Image (cartoon, rainbow over all chains, first blue to last red; front, side, top):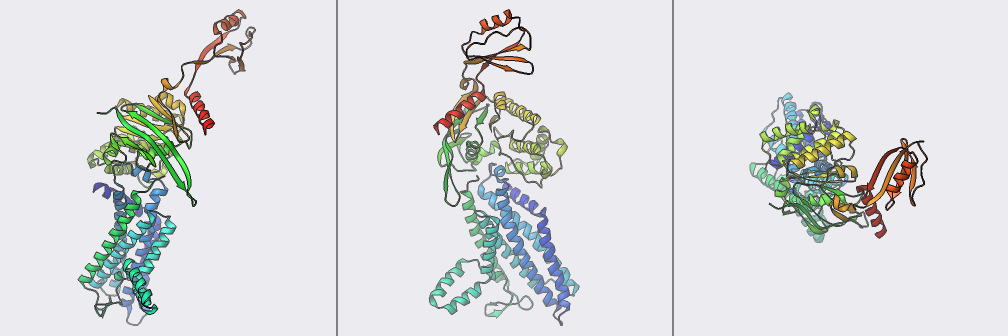
Length: 261
Length: 311
């Protein structure tokens, strides 16, 4: 376990010493803070606007950072050949992949906390609270980036950062559009519906992590009114973690068989 | 305890490169063993398969054929890895770390307890002469300094077997001497050292035994004294400039003018005594007489030539 934590801590250290990451975080904070100005342009909808834009910023920048870090950190080890020094140590290859993944998650967790705190401050300016619904929404977004990170690490185990980033982004877009793809299947006829249904079952359902505005249990949920309950959070978290584990195990199997030329 | 710490048995590696999966046989047949407590040189020209062989032994590349054992266990094995240290060719480390942070990471991966890690890192930084660079990120290190920290990380797990891939590359003469001295010091401590190189004078100064690889195939394994033929290749007689009348050279002899004098190369089988008598009778002044036997370089060139002839 110590070896995995050593790799994770080093990955975190590498990420926090990367200036590009600070630039991305800066833009995320900028968007959240700009919600204050945009909210003031609306008529009595300031808090709603701030919450929407703030969560949107956390979501999008969380995913961008997850893909950026996920595809780069593992690839960099191969490209810069640091892996030649690390893998001959008494370390299983899966421990290396797991350590990198945990390190990236730690980085993302810190980023999410920072973005969440900024949102809390912006809400406080408008005399609103960072309430339980917002906290649940941020947690779901963290599970979302956990899954996106696993997908990015999976692709980077065998392809270049550009392709890995492209595929990961593709998975994110498809994963968020699962209800739309299912609806499309309904319109296209039974055969297409069956095919798209299987596809939707296999693809990562990232829509689960952004439920605001969706119908859950015959009721529309919203972060502003009635948000999802603990059972939904648990199910979505379980799904996200289980999917991450499967993708990560596939990444480890690929990594295990790889020649480091 | 076995005398053999590393054994390569018919190792071969074929890569399939590019879109058309072009077949490249990086190593065709590598068989040798390394014995406990020796310094073993793995020699070969650039692109001969040295690094690929070492990567197979370190578990970084999977062999296409053959098998390897390190410290009595089949490769790759975590227990064996715990007892070996490895320096890759042209090493690149985490540039944002300081030497102490990097060695601490390596120590953690080698399961060295935290307190012991600090102590070992401290000792090793001093041992490889990087005391002045403590606290400086590795990105600010020169190539020679990186090579030194690379050796320090290879020793962090207190290994029995140290494997160094081209440890002299890019080093100046002082740096090379320091690495040579360090290898001999490791040997004195009872460790086994395997290193790859194409810098032959270093091998003659450090290695107990060598293996030579040419175009992916091992040609020679053994003690240098056994591999180099004992026969006399030529005798070189150096005379002072402009003193006396130089007598005629035996058949096949050659005359070279050097900065210090006249150098006469007498071929194998020449009557050197008779030639020297003639030289002295002609009032010439003899500076030196040197018997030239086969050097490692001669053997290397001979084997490389033979390999070219067969390929």
